[in-house]
Length: 444
Image (cartoon, rainbow, N blue to C red):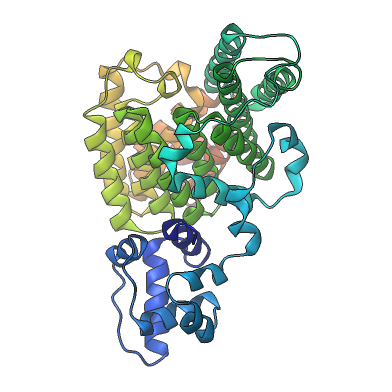
């Protein structure tokens, strides 16, 4: 029997999007079948994941929702019959060993299958991180050492900072090129097992960077393929930092393209790997990502819980210079910006402004350099302006919007440009107000 928690997460994602929506659908089916009312609290799903067996009527309602016959429910019993609701190709996914060298040729495979691989592995994260994959090329080719992996790590670190400054356009090409160099080394060189895992980790991070920059450039389908390959490589590397980051960035793409359920599953998976890093900053960032995913799914209670968890976890964070290198951008201001964006998604502009104002205070105390993150600054300023607009403070909305336009100057980012375009469309309904009219004229 596969991990029941993994199966249930997959079913929630594809039959509801969030736990709350999924359980509401089960309750509705339960009532329609004449079995009476049924609670739809998240704790119910948590108990199922831990092994509690639902009563027969609940199982029949669940089976009806999942298009599984009552005969299978009775014949197979709980939880075996759940497998009937999951495609066979997905059930076999986490038993399939994927070669790094096959990854580019696997571009036509369904991405859902590769997501399931990542979710399945997270169910046994301790074993995953403790069992390295044997080297396929340990005795042939020119010998390379740790210094080769270190050079690629330095170059990827530089690419991350360049993406922050100039946007994703040209950085995408750099990330793809970096992956090709690493892959060539893995194909042709020889190395120890520890060096192989360093190389696999940087290969995964290069693919993650390619996925992120492809998404930021307005190519979500291309991004999906890169993220899927990054996930496979990250699993082979057994590096929890790369695994958590891959899931977290993939989740951003998902909740931004109307897949909040997939995003929530990826963030929950990321937590399994994130805890293994020992970084409270990583935990805080992942809770903030979960807050965004739940907000996009329209689940305010889950979003609020994640927001509180993010702020609580951040209080335990070590100084930035002592933390994981990949978290250089995560400070208290960034956490508040994510929570403010979530509040805005949930139709709470006053709460959003509170978080945006807290972010500004935090950034000043943390000597945050907005010029080093112009795209991020522009996107958050656009959201701040939107919150002011929702509260009918047009002067403040226009003032902040001008700052957003200034920050986006010279930055290549479809995501940033879309944020400003969306803001302009919201401004048009106030187009006769002088301060708004001036902004629209300036940005025509």
